[in-house]
Image (tube, rainbow, N blue to C red; front, side):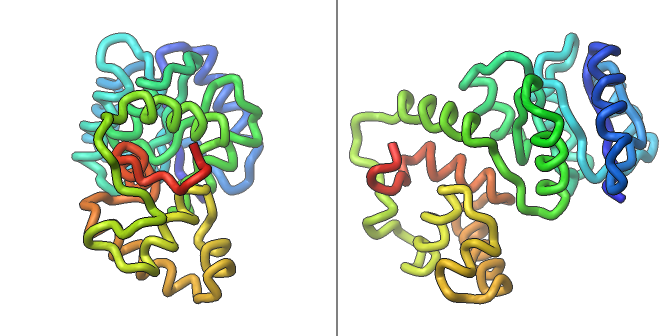
Length: 222
């Protein structure tokens, strides 16, 4: 069972999320909180969720700040950002805070369930719409300096690691990367571990975020 906690300052939203997720046989709701402070209090008291659905725009401590503090206490917890406001800056800040995925509240229930399952499997996904908005935001923030391109050499990464990064940035899963590069999933995991260490990141989402920020865009992808 995937142990999930909900953090949202609107009771109706928490009730709605609980009603939807309780229908899933692989998901167990182990608690909810109406603020970031209340969530962290439950964590300190011993709650051990695998995944936390985090409302970004909560009163008091924001979801972004709560995520930062939560990851300090439980580094391995998977945080999925939730918001009704599709702001590019908010998406970027939530991912930088440590969220592994991000779902718009208007999305279908099936998308939220998939996000939870993928995060738990350590293969988090970002919806095409969120990826598009994130790329647009980072493209606007890029400087006029020539940034590295994944079709060119990037210092520190091997050619094979660059191949893995190209596919990772296109949203491919470990299995899809393995199939496309004709290598095993274990080898993909090894390459990802090396990439994370060299880029000083801790997750697939963070690696993609840093690569996008620094302009590591495959040609014809912008």
